[in-house]
Length: 288
Image 1 (cartoon, one colour):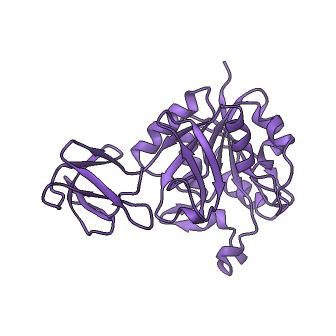
Image 2 (image 1 turned 135 degrees about the horizontal axis):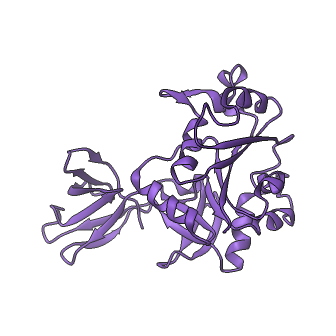
């Protein structure tokens, strides 16, 4: 049985965090009580991946290896390292990691992405154990800033666009991808984009063309009953709801991971005010 191995990509020149990244590489910058790289690494460990290849720049790779070693201080994981000489795109990770991947399935996670929540762990474990090629969609209020995915009710990906002016959905694709072994050949046959990189979007487009790309939704969803009506959307694509009194009471349930919330009302511009049973506010409900 083929196992799932993980690639953790910490590429780029770290220019957006300058000047702090001039002295400490982005992956080792502290976020709360641990370096940034520990968050994506723990994501891989929590879903059952035991072999990880960390790919980074010639300058950063020795620092990561010195800090993490081959087992991250004795954790149940085997870590190896590979240098990406130039930032030639996310998809190059599969070419650099060809020997490491072997005949196995692979999960790629970006080193500056932090994933949190029971829902993510559940869905990621399902994707990890599946033989399907899976990406994720997270609802955002400004999809024009991201890679946007359109999909049907069965989770089949219908379109992918990079920073579209008129997005077809409000779901952005975060940096967590699950592929079968043929991703190596797909990456090898990609042509560099206009900016000279092998784009992960082109990998996903190839799987989409083959009808072999699935999507799992993350984030807040709305479950409506028959007493609540959708009366439109605002300019950002947020859904506006009403009941017979033009005010939302407790007739809509929001689910955030395993926690349920009661809707308190709408501000009239598509933002739904809500609280869960622990009284923690859930500020917005994006369009589904």
